[in-house]
Each structure stands twice: as structure tokens, then as C-alpha cells.
Image 1 (spheres, rainbow, N blue to C red):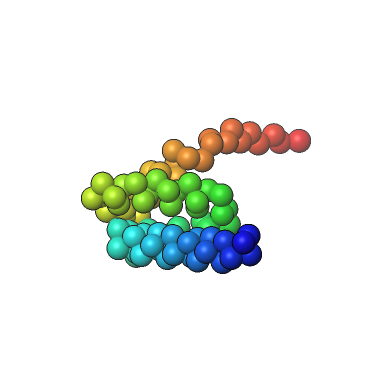
Image 2: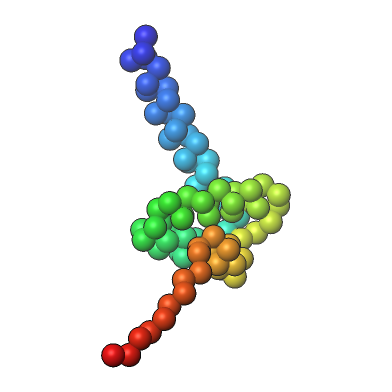
Amino acid sequence: MERNEEPLRDDQVRQIQMMKRILLRKGMSSDARERLGRIKVANPELAEKVEMIALQFIQQGKTINDEVLKELLSRLTPKRDIKIRRI
């Protein structure tokens, strides 16, 4: 029976991912989608967090443009304290 359950899980995962892509496509500007795509390549974990927050915004009826996405990213990424020492 376990073998029969696994394809259902895969199908469910695919269906959820497809629905997520559709919602993100409808609720995000093209600039924001492009930026999120670049982030996904560089940092998949951060992109997943941003997608979840963006989906919540979209479900509330808000549109995600590039400026909103930048604000989300600035809140999710830790600030680095960079010090340059000259030797």
C-alpha cells in the first residue's frame, strides 16, 4: 500500500507547487518575479521564505512589486557589519 501512496504525495506536491507559481505570477510584478528568480538561484532557502510571505500578501489582496520585494528581503537578511582594515 505504501507504493500507491507515494505517487499521490508526488502529485499533491506538484499540484501545490503549480498553484503557488500561478498565484505568484498573478500577484507579483514582472520585475519582482525576475528578482525572485535570481534569488532562487543564489539562495533557495531565502527565496522559499520570501515566496511564503509573498503568498500571504497576495492572499490578502496585495500586489508585490519590486520595491515591496526589496523591503521583504531587507527584513529577512541579516545585516552584516563589514570592517575594512588597512595593513
